Structures are given as C-alpha cells and as structure tokens.
Image (tube, rainbow, N blue to C red):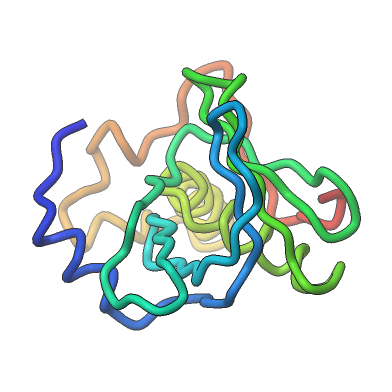
Length: 158
C-alpha cells in the first residue's frame, strides 16, 4: 500500500481514541517484547519508542483479526499474512478488553456494517432512507451484500 510518510506522522499527532504504554512484540522470529507508546488514531495503530515523538511504525487496522492470547495479552494478525502476529501486553484484563474492543470498532468495515445496520433499522421503523437526503443512498459501499449478514453491536463474546 502506498502512503505519504509526512501525512502519517501528522495523523499520528492527532488526538487519539486510546493511548497507553503497552508491551509489544513484532511479527519477526526472535522479536522480543518491548515497551511502546501505542496510539489508536482513526483506523491506524501507531507505535512509538517511549522517549520519541515520531512513530516507528503504524498498522492499518483493516482486514485484520484481533484475538485474546491470555487475560492481559492480545494479538493482531492480518488476513493476508495470518502467521505474522503483533502481540500486545496490557497492564490489566480490563485494559486488554478495552484495547481489543476499540481496535475492532476502528476498522472501516465495522463502521460500514454498523451504518448499514442502522440504515436498515431506521428504514424499517420510519419507512424512509436516512441516506437519501445526502444523495448517497445508491452507492454500492452502503448496500448490503447478498449472502452477508449485518454485524450486531454485541461484542460481549470477545
């Protein structure tokens, strides 16, 4: 994927949905857990050395799987490289759950599915399409794909 490094650095400085120092291990064999400042900004997870202002890396949280490894640890793996996992160690079980929930909800696909779900519910209740007033009701990205189900908001099973 192409990206503009200066724009990513600028994005990393924006207010974050979450930020904390977490233990982090990269996907390479032999990587060890290091303390990193981790910031969730929109659908990017930036990570920094704890004493530096510029990120040393960023994960685009699209087409990834977030999985609990143990009570205080979770991992992120990308669908096209499932064997490469990024591991994150939290300070508590509660912090781990908060990070997992926030990362899952940060993806474009999660937001799109929620928009479709609420659009369908509003249409069912009112008989009106809430997107029609914006002139985007016929756009493909806001349509329910045949064969796919809408995501519910229940994330208690995480």
